[in-house]
Image (spheres, helix red, strand yellow):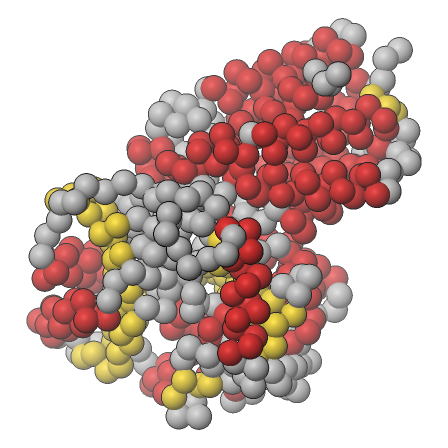
Length: 208
Length: 333
């Protein structure tokens, strides 16, 4: 049965670091009208640090991999995204302790723990124009695809995240700096939902 | 973009080098993680005050580190909250055994990172209290937003709590004072022109020559309303009205009036604002007992101003007047 090995997960995060470096300007431009123009730079900086850490000392299991990612993001990203993504990976890591690969069911469990932690840390619910709007539908898609092959489930999750990301455009922000704009936040795609989608898309579609 | 920088990514580190070189007797700069601390910290038996936030608001917070004000300040990247390891290491470094007060401006990133830092410090056996400053009346509807932003009152809270901590008041008392200052302070700001974040390279929003933005924050985010440019007197009225309406300032109340520059506004214009603001306060029967006029909480090169009114009491007056010796605020010391 197909599974997410430590190698596959490490490759995912290394490639995600490249994606975020390339998306730096795009994310910052999304963040300029409704945020503070720092999301792209912060995410690129954080994942560059993750890449350095993973290359210097490749973790032996998925749990320690996710924990390394969490601690690195918490100490390098700053802004709201650092603690939020950091909490996601930290809580996800607690469900992967000592495991050298994850089944779809195990990854779904990690994802749910991560999302629950992230939502508690950010006190956020779906529909508030945040990364939760990409991540929550992705979790639902993973659960709905429980009986399907792993790759199909990951693709479904990425597609759901893409839909959720686009669906943030008409929303009025209720969290973070975008919320200060009131109705003026409507019509802009949320940068956090966008970076969340980038991550999930790369997990579903490894490069090369 | 025209700026006095060498490279966008070097801005914060090079500014820290400069601060350390310029104010060696007052402060020490620690690196990786970065924070600025009082040269004589930890002070035994004194509650330590730790604040922090994104860079670009100078002199806040690093310029307020020193005797009678902050024990440490943690600078993030420009307009980006610092990370928990900074506040955790700073709290350890300045804790004199009487505990640490975190003064946090209400921005999602700052609040989340300080929460994680407080968890780490408590796990390390340090007594930590956190007070969130949220004094910006421009944010009208709290249930629909992340709550009011922390702006001008932050500077006043850091000074007043610093004065109280210097008298060896216990942590709960200093935290209580900080909450009182926040509860009695209100601010409102406006911009004539947006700021340019170094790594972005262009203004964070565009204003036509005859437009201004009312209700701006301090991170280049646009404000609540974009309106036609008015005279200084009319702008002052537009800032004072919501501030006065928000807190029940009564006739005869003693207040501290703080007219702040956003970074690119000359002091001469701030006094034109102050002149009208003081007149409006007088008409409301308020007694302006203390004043602060200057650029203390800025937004890079944004042009504009903010007005903060703080309702004072005897203890707050005493703490405000107490000696302070920091790079950017000093009197009586």
